[in-house]
Length: 139
Image (cartoon, rainbow, N blue to C red; front, side, top):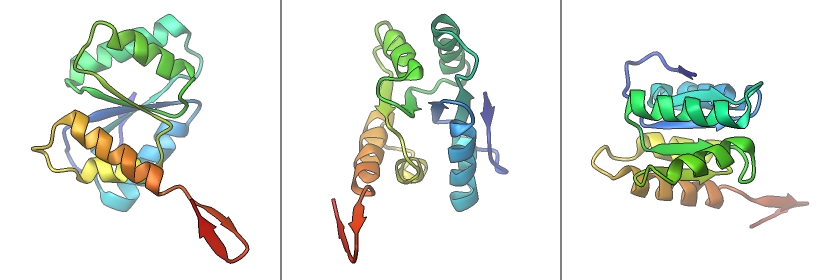
């Protein structure tokens, strides 16, 4: 698990994904915003269910974050995060994360609750999805 970014920023969330997904998307957030240090990157590559869950618990406690973004709604990281949520009532999970959502999240006012920031980010991420056919763009 790593924080990406040149600035010394306090991590506000963990981004979990398959292979190098989380490193790539957090790196993109940093390149665009300079705020990649607000996100901890965590790959589930080579880890079993129990290992993912244990590492999530460790990082949540170490960095005192309460938001997890995952790449797939039914993926192993999401399933592990849901297990952690059973005894961590303050945890917020956002699945199917995209770049637009993470950029919105890192720019959310520090006075905003982590849950409200995650909800706003998810709304922005959904709104960023479009389908283009020919010369038209639709949702």
